[in-house]
Length: 391
Image (cartoon, rainbow, N blue to C red; front, side, top):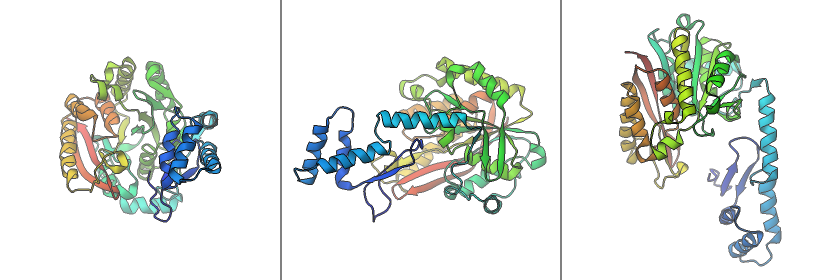
């Protein structure tokens, strides 16, 4: 992404998977040279490009520095990168718990400070036992406090949620298409440790192994579930029971047509999750960690998007069309709108919502809050709070 620091212009390169923690800033004149690292061009092509950029004949030192910087950081698809990747994935697989990697950046790492913030910003649950699910954002809390508050205040009171297991369906931003990321690890946050329902995890893996990525490394770097656990622990205590499920995108359905369940593995996962939902209905509560549209230059669009203005007014209308289908439990209508334009709105919560509607059919929902967040000067993310109930 472009550097946000005017004192250090250029292109920032970092690894969202955290195989490497390095961050590089490539100066503006050298950005064009990155196109030479495409697996097709040679070192001679790179040298020629650097000569063109600099106007100098002797560029061997610059060439070596650029290559070494990218290679040492693990940003080239070569043996160095593969070693970093294999090492980090093996480390995660062997870890007993999933650490809170966003503590200290997206929210306070100190439990007392975090509790103070959440008490002030969210308060306590005020919903009724009729509420069986909510959808909340997974955007940075600083970008969506009002929407988080609307969602989490709609949860049942503490005494009504006693002994519940919270099924958390999160967006897998980096996950494989048509796959569901599972883990047996407990989730550690500044509040304490949330317990994962390993028995249900085992059941899902057995029923739909081809659609499951067990101990999916995406859990190590994904925020869409971590944020929900924080809010749930704040409301109900640190030792809550959870079933964390990362939902990968249904890419084939979006781009080639048909329904996600035309994939046999996905269909089996839906069936297994639906059977668990029916059998365990009295002790499950569902939380969807989802954002909606992603519009603007940060997301590859040519326009400079401004929240609640211009093009974003039309985006809101389209968001609300999809939400209306969700509210009516119209899963087919909802998915047909997602497929329009190959989901040009880029709803990163599309697959968790669809998964939930397939596992828990016949529900109705209410939109509690809708918000457009100016994530940077040229880009906007939309999200909402939904409360689900039986008809």
